[in-house]
Length: 392
Image (tube, rainbow, N blue to C red; front, side, top):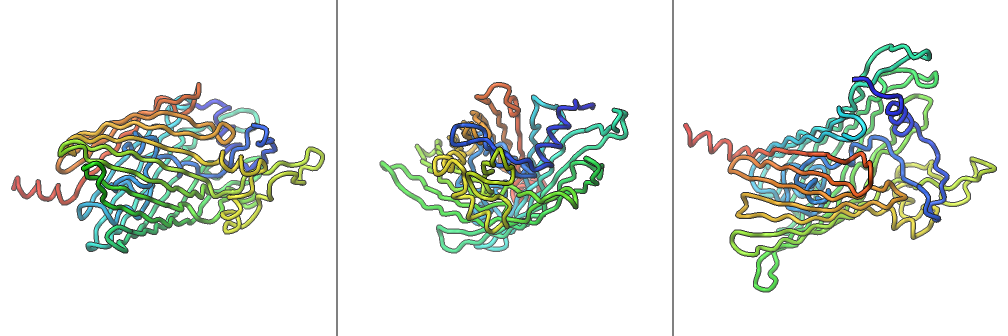
């Protein structure tokens, strides 16, 4: 379908270019952190999508690669495959979507290997010449391919690592401002940990979990030979969840995630000299420096650093491990992107598969995430085999 020039401009300017922001964040003006390939930060599965996009410390499932690869070490079963689909940015354009294929295989009682493929399509975009004549139509697309390994260190503690190849083709080699463009590529890694312990409160059994994941730690990306490379969304996610078994049929889980991008905050530049920084720090640094610098480089000081923390909280209720109801909330400060929304979801689990749905309800008017329905389907390979044998 044909896109408006506004959408093309958004894709070109926001995603490809690396413009400097000079807003005084300390006075409440916009000073959002900029990265390329933002699709890596979007929650792809419906279970987490139903609890406010929290997932670093929830119980493990086949989609744990995105949230915390270390969780795979605690997963039940010997193997599984999951599919997830999200139509995205529905209020802007109707044909942007994200799809995920994920799976895992248990090596032994302590070790699990996993893999996933995350694919994002930005829909059909017409490319025109300087006179407005249509030259061709191209479908920008991005994907990330992951390989992960998780291991139990003790009965309660596990660690995980994942390696990621990232590919982003936004222009199909077209010229932009007289400069030839190219697909952006990068390699990144996740390092994660997960702690899970059984507890008892008021004669009720349950367990508490804590998770930590440093994700997308990798090389910068560029879309042309002449363009300055930009950071990918390196991120620190930490959180906890508490599950209580109310009785033999009912249990409820409360989860909370905190997220912070490990990417430099745009500084404030002098109006008289655009190259002179008057507040904040130089963002043109190496990846390793950027990670440590990101904890103290906001031009608004410690208050602005706190504004860069995103909160995700949710509740999940299960009846007899067969049916789930979920709700959650996600909060991002108005000067850092202003994503604020409630989520709701439901799930049904049978012997061989689990089907989940989630829906997003924004608090910000005309929010691009409005009316987003996500669904995911997970298969337990062993259960499928057993069901096949019993029929045979």
